[in-house]
Length: 53
Image (tube, rainbow, N blue to C red; front, side):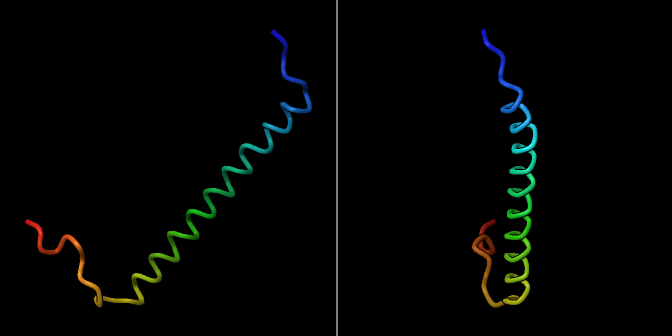
């Protein structure tokens, strides 16, 4: 069984955490925008589960 070349190993050690940080940043940005939009609407829209007991 061959080992992974050192260049690929270094690339993976850098690329994987960077892509993870970018994905986390994008998700938090989207969540913030959705929360901001929800606050702007106020109570205009009725919740889908408001009539469920």
